[in-house]
Image (cartoon, rainbow, N blue to C red; front, side, top):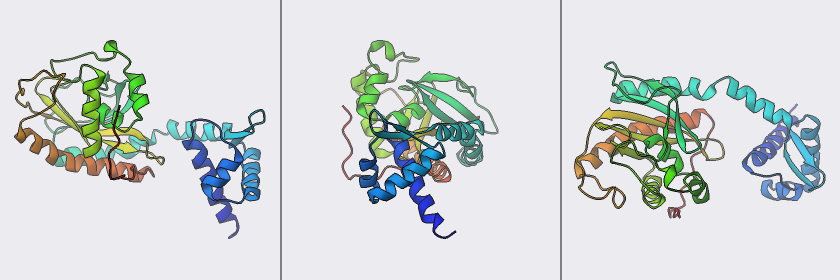
Length: 280
């Protein structure tokens, strides 16, 4: 029994590596990345293939995830684990800070809301479960976009038609969006004030999976309006100093809730590099 545990752990590491790769990979790469003997690697791959968790592409001599892994993921999604785990954490956040709490995911270049938790005195908002809004305008959307690869962001926003506006505020083009994402990536949270609905603002933070990828975002919406700085919204995202303090204070419990959800899901936040990546 005891000898089976290390083998199980190595097998799980193989599956974890394959899950993080966008394409099938050769056995030699698996052995090198996981620091395993090649003989052990082939033995593990053979067992995982027999169980259906790994498939072998003979023409390419590469390995990828098998049907059993897909079925396991589908069963996980059917259980709505993200919503089930997030709901009590989000409820605690709303009870602590007030406002309306959200759990959102990216659906293309839109934010899709999975949960909405309302305070004792509900606010009238356009957000609700199942509602989709332009991700470049929402704080939950940009909290996730800020953690995507630059090429991914560019593909989601290829031209002017990808930047619909709801108010006079918010990024109108990729150049402005890049600046916002750079700032929000560096500080670890996103904010929008009047981008979605005039008179309301939202602060949001990302939730990560086991591969440090953004899978969701936690946000809180409050009734608030910062004075317009009087500049072209395409050229500046500056806000009055008092607004910056409000957002920073609200970001503390929002980030803590997002971190708690990440940990509960077995996720890992990205490791700080010391130099923020430039989004181009």
